[in-house]
Amino acid sequence: MKFPVVLHTDDGVRYGVTVPGLPGCFSAGDTLDEALDSVREAIDLHLEGMAEEGVPLPEPRLLAEYQSDPDYAGGVWAVVEVDASRVEGKTEKVNITLPRNLIRRIDEAAKTRGASRSGFLAEAARQALRKG
Image (cartoon, rainbow, N blue to C red; front, side, top):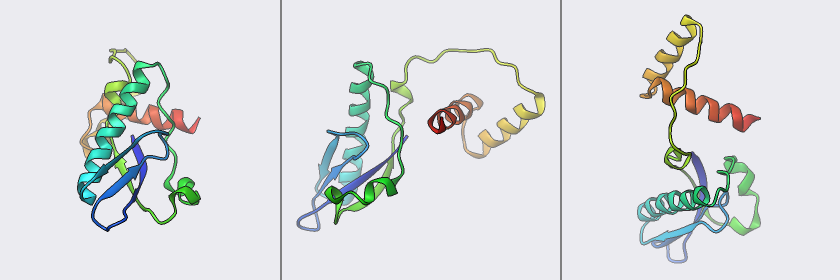
């Protein structure tokens, strides 16, 4: 999952990081790189807590949806990606039937992205579900 984050600094060196899409999720670092690394960990822990409480994972939103919020004015924006699959629950094997040519195209697309067939189909399903 990708999350827009906003970084603020008072001294141009140390950064505080807020994740607008996850209220209460924030982090900091002594450098920009350290702040981005630590916010990935904060997001991961936040998602883990949500899963343990049975709270559904948030729907990703676009960066532009947050940029107009005055609470984040003057911040530096970034997008961080975290692997949310481990909090989505135990994997299950399923048997599906698809046309051979579609399977071939799926496999080609997965290979170019460095993904497995299952990983590719899972991400396609997540995207389709987000679009509703």
